[in-house]
Image 1: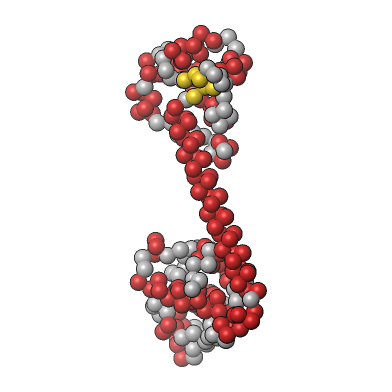
Image 2 (image 1 turned 180 degrees about the vertical axis):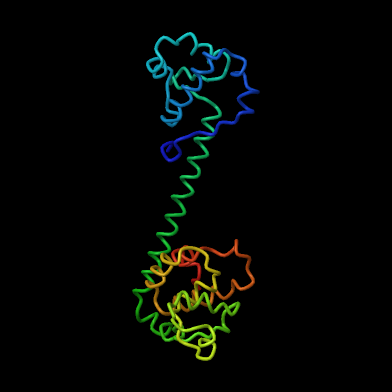
Length: 230
């Protein structure tokens, strides 16, 4: 876990106000070395390990324990450094949250694939497909240059206004979501959707017209997590 974050948080004020700042530079130096060793071992350190790692410093090690700068649980010989233990717990919580989020995303994708297998059930929905032509007036703003850029059109804005042309559905979705997230990843995921799912995504995205940018999800997450499902 500590490999995910190869450094620990060091607060100067806490150090200067702590007991360690009153001790000799030799003891302070040993303690910071012990902290590094403790961190790379993810807090799974015993006193025996420290004595082997820092031979000849047993008296200084004893001072750290007597001062309460380090704690020693005799039954299991476990050493604990409070401020590093708290940080390791925080890292563990973050890792668990990421794993749970990834699991939810995987389940949403599996659910989407399962739905696509029910051909007979979805037959009627498939008839309600995203229109091949979408007028620029359907968008929150007449953001024509953005659309032209996304669709790779070669004509000018004025020519576009005279001739409302077929737009790639993902381009419209991306504009509706105010270009939040990765266009490339979003497009790949969008291509995996069935027609009725694309329509649901388009209709859901239109609801973001009055939404602040920070509250609009990234388009790839929006599709991957199936946020538009009915």
